[in-house]
Amino acid sequence: MLTDIEIAQNTKMKPISEIASALGVTDEELIPYGRYKAKIDDGFEKRMADKPDGKLILVTAINPTPAGEGKTTTTIGLGQAMAKIGKSAIIALREPSLGPVFGVKGGAAGGGYSQVLPMEDINLHFTGDFHAITSANNLLSAMIDNHIQQGNVLGIDQRRILFQRVLDMNDRALRNVVIGLGAKADGVPRQDKFSITVASEVMAILCLASSIKDLKERLGNILVAYTYSGEPVYAKDVGAHGAMAALLKDALKPNLVQTTENTPAIIHGGPFANIAHGCNSVRATKLALKLADYAITEAGFGADLGAEKFLDIKCRAANIAPSCVVLVATVRALKYNGGVAKADLKEENLEALAKGACNLEAHIDNLAKFGIPVVVAINRFATDTSRELEFIEQICRERGASFALSDVFANGGDGGVELANEVVKACEKPSSFKYLYPDEMSIKEKIETVAREIYGADSVKFDDKALKNIDSIMKVNPEFGKFPICVAKTQYSLSDNPKLLGRPTGFDLTVREVKVSAGAGFIVVLTGEIMTMPGLPKEPAALKIDVDENGNITGLF
Image (cartoon, rainbow, N blue to C red; front, side, top):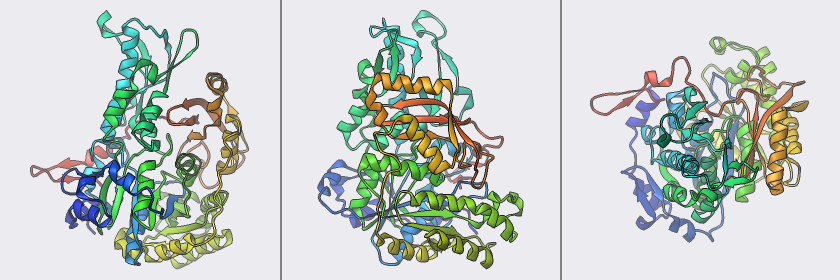
């Protein structure tokens, strides 16, 4: 079989103007970035404001394993399959980050015959949104340090600067740095940190902002530091928010592309769900709801992270609710959760499957707590046996979830017809969507609720630093306590320990730090050993990525 990038390069794409025209987007409302990608202007959004929304479908997954689950591939394939059964559908995805492309992954644009195109562009610089976010973030950092250098009228305590620089690249050497060394003109020396761009509050703000006005207000509300007397300092206090909004003006506009079967796709915003809120932009999702009868979106990593944050953070911010949730799983991944080594996953093993299926059961049970119909999509592999598939189907029936096999990697939309039909049926079922916790619940109680109800923890252990953080946040502004929480946690386990597979019990969740993202409008909760600046693995994906003398890229997958 051809590689992902070979399939992508051999696909006949339509001009993006043709894709846009079919959606009702005029030439004046389309901002082309070459032949096959474009941004949609704000005027189209305003023109469509009174059009009824379509149905929203959220795609999530079990906890990721080295065997792979294929969540993005399933999302794209489902969109293509909806077209196959005669439904009006559009896909709304996150943008992949440049960092992971060169880090652990070789791409994040789907796979096989269910990809978004142009795949190389999307996996690299795309329309420059991430660069704009990085620049806006680091402008604020530069202005904070310049304010201190130029007399520090606000009295910023350089030991209590909260805002960090970012870079869209995995680079552990930047986690802890010292800046301002050298002569007096080179700045005031202090310790600083770098995060990866997708973990930044600026990324979250871009994804949650409804307009330029809202964007600028949120940017201004970023809590950046404290003064020597303990007073809060915001981005607007150093005068950075206007220029930051200017840098993000075009990045705020959603990007339009297409799939391998020319199904329209909006790709915009890309925070990771393990260290941020893990959803594409509110503007992209709400636009998708106006453009088709079915808008299919995804949340990052497993349902314990991406789906929970989508439902408790994004749905609150955007006032939206999915009509159904698609939960992606594989037989291979469930056997891995049951203790089978990656090299042995091709062999039938009902005992291991029975042991590992508890991870699937946990996610079905968790999603049911939000009151939304669930469809389990088994991303099928050739090595899956009929007995293994029947076993999973029985689990789904017992848990009240629908079930469908999916083979969209090898067969594109045709491989997702069964899934598409089940999704349509699920969307017609009654839904009683509800959040996991109310706004009025305290920060500690919200953390404890998510830990208990979603992760399955017995209790939460708060480090002294975390408790002090919460007290400080509430002293600055008691209204911050009404924010939803965004837990930074390993994606590999329901717990905060990546080695605990399946459905762990009898564990405590350890909270080591709590921060307020006042502009984004949520509380960030750091647990376990999670890092907001990842490092490269022993063999980075970059080792396999190359370009020939004709400009043809290889190694992206």
